Length: 557
Ligand code: ATP
Ligand code: MG
Image (cartoon, protein in one colour):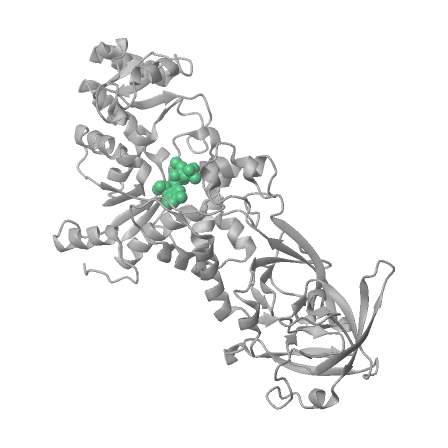
C-alpha cells in the first residue's frame, strides 16, 4: 500500500506510514466506537474525521461499532441518531454496523479462559469496599479476601453470576493483576458486573455485562483493527488493553494510540452534561442550534464540509487545549462566503416612503445571487416607493463614522437608487414610525452601479414592503458565559441566559419557499437558514448560523 499524502498530517498518520513501510500491515483498519447514550458532538466529529478519514486516505476500512456494554442509558434512538450524523458528515462505515454486544458470547468465553488461568476471580466486596481497597496513586491497594478462591470455585460463582443468582452489586469478576501497581487501572480491574436491565440488542439474554476495558480490546482484536485510536484519558488503560490481549488466546494484536480530546470554548462536550441541558430544558433538545452537537450544528446551518475543515485545522496531537470558537466560525464563514446565495432581510424594520415615486410604482431589479460566482445566476427583486430598512441604518443626527442614512443626507439603496431623507414621523413615545425621502431619479434610471454617484455615501439594504414576507430571526450567542464551563463544578450556573435573541422582520419574496437548512447570506446581516423545527408555510423562522466577519468589508460591491 502506498504512503498517503494528506493536507494535514499528524503523528498517527506518521505511525501508520511507518507501519506500512515496514510491511507490518496490508490493510489499515480503524473503528469509531460511540456509546449509544447520547447524540454525537463536535468532539466526536474529530474522532470520526480521524478514524474514517484515515480509512479513506489509506484505502482501508473503518468500522462503526456501538460500544453497548452498559444498557442502562443506551437506546436504539441514540443508535439511529449516531448513524444519521456520521452519514451526514460524509462518511460511511465498513459493511454492517457492529455492536460490542455481537461478541458477548466470545467475551464471556475469554473471561472463563482468564479464570481457568488463575487470572480472574469473583469478588464479593461491596462497591465501596472495592474502592477503599484500591488505594490511591501514592498508596498501594489491598488484596480482596476473595482473591484466593480456587479456579473451580470461581468458575462456579461466575456461572452463578450469569444465571442471576446474585443480586446487583453483590458480586463481580475481577482480573488478578497487581494491587500495588503504580497504575490504578491495573489494581485488579473489574471485568464483569451484574445488571438486571434489558439490553436494546440482546434483550434479556444477559444479566452480566463486560466492562469497557475488557470488551474494547477484545472487540478490536476480533474485528482485526490495526490502529485503535482513543483519547488521552485512556493512556493508562493501554496497559490493561495489552495485558488482556496477551493473556487470552487471540491471534490479532491491535495497538492503541491516544490523542487529545477536543475542547471548545464556551461549550461543554460531555454527553452527561449535554443531556442535563436537555433534560432540565435549558435548551430545546439535543438539536437545539446552540448545542455543540452534530445535529445542533446541522439545524443551525453548519455544513458537513465546514465541520470537516474545522477538524482538519484543529489537528491531532497529544496537547490538551481549548479551541477558540472563532476557529469553528471562520470555517463556516469561509464555506458560506463561497457557496451561500445572497438575499435581503431586514431584522429590525422601519418604514421608509419615497415621496417622489407614485404608490403604484414598481421596478424589477436584477440582483446577482453571488458577487463573484456568476454560475449562481441572478434573481429579480421588486422595488417600490415603500420599503423596509433597518432601524440601525438611520439616524437623525450625523456622526463622523456613521456611513448610513442621516436626516437631510443621502445614502444608496443597495442595487437600487440614491435617496435623501427629508423628515420623519414619530409616535407618542418619540419613536420614529416612518422616514420620508426623495429619490434621485437619475440614479434610479441608470441602475448601472458604477456610473451613478456613490462616492463617499454608504449603502444600505432594503425590502419593498409590498413584496416582503414576515419572518422571525433567531440570533444565537454562546450558551455559557465563561470560556471553559467544562471544568466548573456547577456548570449550569454559568449558562448564558441571553444566548437566544428573537427578532421580527421581513425577508424578500424569493425566500418564500426556502428549503430548510439551506444557507443564505443576508446582505450585511450574516448567514442564515430556515429552522425546520419552528418554520411552517405560514411562518418563516431563520437561524443565524454566524455573523459576518466585518459589515463594512462585506458591503463592497
Ligand atoms: P462523553 O464524555 O461525551 O460521553 P465519550 O468518550 O464517553 O464522551 P464515546 O461515545 O465513548 O463518548 O466516544 C466515542 C469516541 O469518540 C471515543 O473514541 C472517544 O475517545 C471519542 N471522543 C469523545 N469525545 C471526544 C472529544 N471531545 N474529542 C475527541 N474525541 C472524542
Ligand atoms: Mg465513553
